Length: 276
Image (cartoon, rainbow, N blue to C red; front, side, top):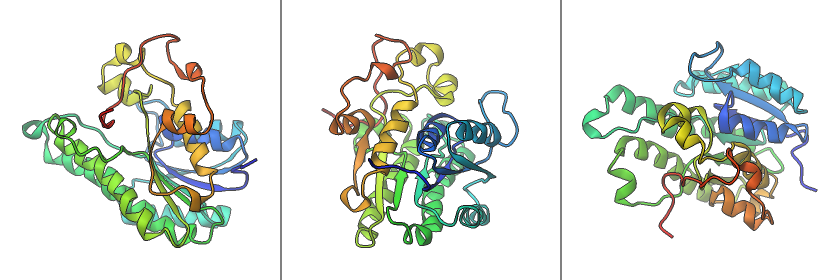
């Protein structure tokens, strides 16, 4: 059976939500998890810190290395990657999960927020990948996985919040380019995106609160889909824009009821899904 035992995953934004779910799923195999995130002290509106995440990862069976890291800054990213390699001997997987969101129109988007989204989402993804690639090249099954949407270049996804869409699609363009760039070297580069809204702090605080959460799935579906991707031989899966449910169906999963926040509730589709 494929496994992540002994593999080292460098995950940005893994102190909560989807990043933590991916980390904990890998930890069940005995993986090493580098938690590269900003939250060292408890936040009034956001659950978890890098230290509480480390505890959950270790309780799940993995080894954790919590590192304070703001991926907007080159020196912090390269220092975190160096510490990961020093601690665990290398990096096998880079998960670009950290993201900033601001669903505002052009006239209501302060340039400070624009810069934040592009600095974390697009630039941070490129930077973290760049820092990890020299170490991924030494791995037997190297993967980069970006938590970003399929490139559905439709007006309906840009018009309501053009700055945010540009920033998320920038992450996806990293997939499109790097998959081709590193295909011959055997580094898999893929995107993963949820078919439905996922129950995270962003949904609770920014996207409708309890009413939206009731139509959401838990982050564990993304953890399971990421695990399925990261345990696939890298030369057999690259350049894909994976949708969690669809990809798990490819791998034989048929019952998704376990992931519903409210059993039997009508699920709410996420942004950026291509027209059926």
